Image 1 (tube, rainbow, N blue to C red):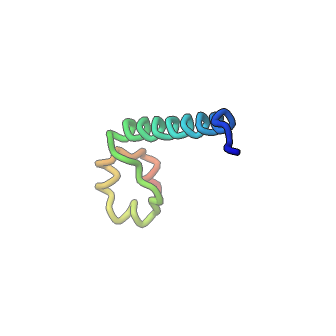
Image 2: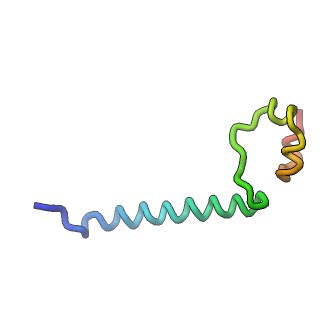
Image 3: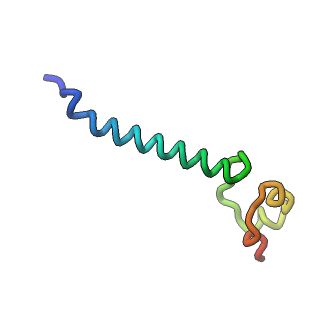
Length: 66
């Protein structure tokens, strides 16, 4: 006997809403960053070695604290 679709419907709705929320948050973050995706795992070496990247990306001033 199969599983009725009514039993799976809440899970599908929750997963769909989580996906929509994630896509929306990603879009908002990109819009706040001038249309570019955010950088992850930026450490001290990245900040010192290529400071022009942060100027072009419009990063906050607290990234320049050494």
